[in-house]
Length: 463
Image (cartoon, rainbow, N blue to C red; front, side, top):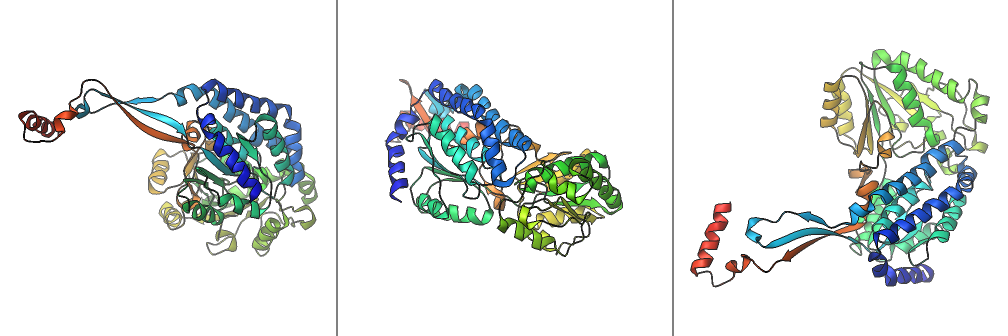
């Protein structure tokens, strides 16, 4: 506790200096971070491969590229974000000017997950620095190689008094949560999110919780089924299925089931190999992050009917790309978020039954609809809720920095990316500047004067 307390004290002492940093100073920090990431991209990819055999191409696309994109967008827009925002002032306050001033919250804590261990620490850090905060960030203990590279990258760019990565087991996270941070940003499971929120409540610390949940997919009858199979294959098996917005389960009309299964099989064989041994040897498919994650999924699917009867490989922590073809709503895989390369397929006759099922369960982080029917799409969107949604694709909504990314209910609270991240780590301070001439003195006592009575008549007139 002494080490993190000392670090917290150092950053607390520096927070006002950081909060008063200029636009150009913050941009310079972010560009230095970008330069460091680019210069060490091969080390970064190697670290994630060492942790769970994350394919180099996926690390490039979903970790390095997304981080650089977030930096580029913040650098481009930061001057506009930091500028005080003028707002209108009502007639009753004539003579005044009003504006919103964006202020850094102070010292913030980022608790990053293991599934996207680089980008899901860097991206909120970019937003926090852009907003003028000091940052303590803890990477997951489950990805130690990536944690070490993050510690080095951040250490080479920032002084400890501005941003510092701290590495440790769960007890370190618990010690950090005892400190009175000005904001906590957590990405992880709903269960741990509740623990984080309870700890934050002791200090009335605001939190952003980026959680997960079972994100449903609805395929309509009016679709290009081959296109659906290809996109679902990509979104489901990227990162070995260990993606918070991955399609978790699929509803498809009964009459399309057989055709979809055949198309999905072709995708697996085309992308990962036609035999189980080829699929095991592919370098384009990540492994489960640890034995615990492997065992949990292997047990869930051991009695289920699978499209391909590839056997899980415990020594490789390898769960093969799996489509479950005869799942019921009571199957073990429907109990909680799968977080792995397993897609349960369920059928429906009427769309209403699907909507009823989704509404009866915790609000998901994402919802996906495949259809050419605009009326059907509109019906699903207005009849359900989710953190985000995508139409005729999956996952891609989080790649647009102009959209907020975050959950709702059990899938989280708060959002970030782009300006939404800047605002998450900022306090919107309301400022009213009274000029020389004002009408407000007419509302001061005594209220029996002619001018005062006139002023109150004006207020009523304005109603």
